Image 1 (cartoon, rainbow, N blue to C red):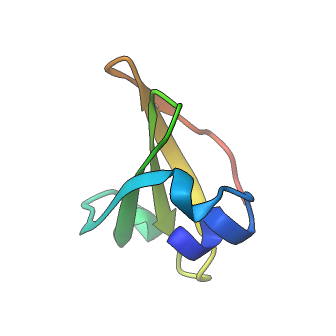
Image 2 (cartoon, helix red, strand yellow):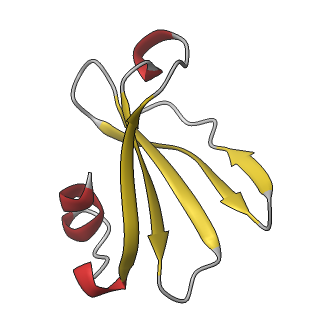
Length: 74
């Protein structure tokens, strides 16, 4: 997922403060590895997952303790 963020979203590796993979218990193809990404100079925390087609998708982000779900089909 780090590779996706650095190559597809053009985020420099040095701007990634942390990344933590884990297995989620979400429904459907979201029941897989998720990565939490925290970036320099950005107060949001991003949650990505990899679907059954091996696409990396931004599931949600958290800003100031408020979760924002991305309702986007890819």
